[in-house]
Length: 309
Image (cartoon, rainbow, N blue to C red; front, side, top):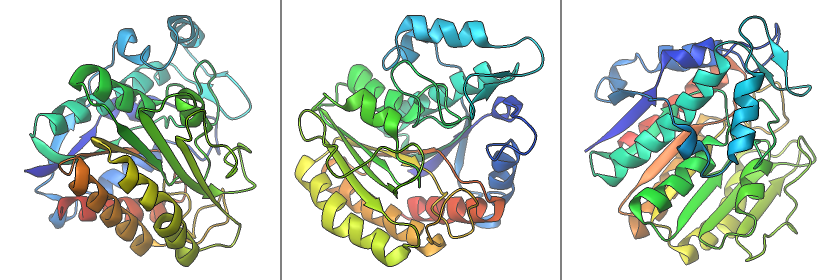
């Protein structure tokens, strides 16, 4: 079995205001990095568009309709200070969701060992009924819930190493003991959530915040002492990763100092967890990462690790 890459050119059509860090060039940089010879064995699939029924696994139908109604025929509309839509944004967001669910199907069917879903807009800031932080629909959360509904999985772990806390994922799974949400992130930083004391109704939320200036040593310690033990105890049937690469030392939106080797390390550690209880099954979904060089090199390191599983 191989690693599956899921993406779609429609995700380039989600346009953002001039100077916005979440821009189409992010996917182009990743695409260019994955043209290297070592990635030629990647299985590659086009992300389908998700139906509203699938999106509604985590978002109410009236919220989905409100996003649809907000979609402009031309120009751009702002949903909040950071989050906007262009005419191509709705399709891009639906393909981001569809890419995640397709990856779940392929991994669950044994057609791929694991998958990386290279899509945008990102998703982990989207709360149950609120778009924010560049995000419209919470694609990773939907993938986790879809795996439960479609494939009958009892326990899914969602691990988020984006530098910004995934407040949306935490919101969606706050009172759900069948999903373990684990996050490392810089704090204080946008969106202001993610304290250690935020543990969910069933102690199913695990936050391991880092401080500005922290690097690989502190990141690895947070995983070794806080997150990995909880994952082993939980024994997930599937691991979904919110793979943000904005904790990289080059990233302009934060102040952590990770390098490519740290992403290799954390990917290998999460693969060990997946091997123990989930038959190796991992679906990793792109979140943040705004320096094009740091992003493309980190994604390449992440996928290289996945391919060696």
